[in-house]
Length: 152
Image (cartoon, rainbow, N blue to C red; front, side, top):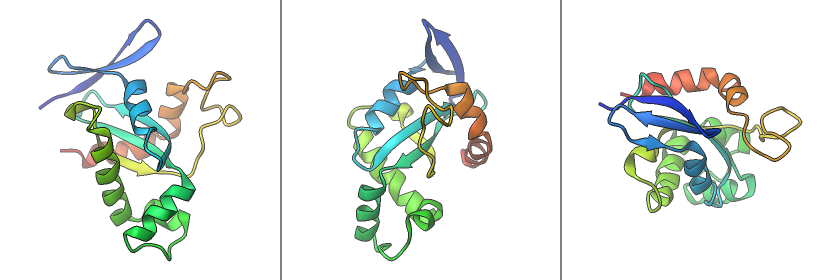
């Protein structure tokens, strides 16, 4: 199995698997964010787990339209974000989109959908809109712990 550990080079964050594969979270996030249903994304790696996990902030309008196509049109945005069936279908859709541009080990194994926009005001991004990774990791640590407990 592959393990992921963080490495910092030239102010860029990289994750390295135990097989020596380097993963660039910003690159991965940028690819997923090309999907019209993904407004923002934050990738994390855990050195004791073989795969990566992610927090995704969906684009509300496109997410709600998509939910209608999978028979969940009567649910509110908040209800959809926590629905396990929606989560499973959503990761399948966004990974199908992302795998045309990413390697298999760069795809998120687990995701959680949240309604928290990453802004300067909530101290999650810098004034130049770079993600504040340590702040984000702390803020979402419980969600990541749960996701990593689900990764085999």
